[in-house]
Image (cartoon, rainbow, N blue to C red):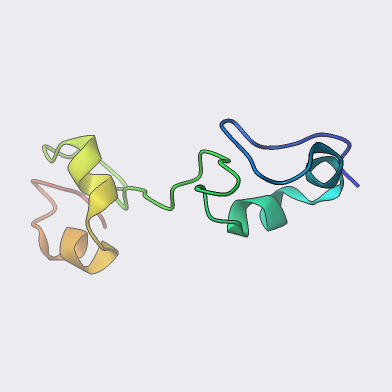
Length: 75
């Protein structure tokens, strides 16, 4: 039991239930139902990148990996 919700936005999940669910479970619920701010978007860069952060987070890992490391380092 966590005794707190991990929602950062709106939630249709009852507050008492939110408080009992582990964070990993809350994050599996679609953000349209229970917004934890975890939108699944992340960059796979491990170093410097000239690619805008929002674009890095929007494209699949395979797309990021085909870019040369001098432009978007995923090594």
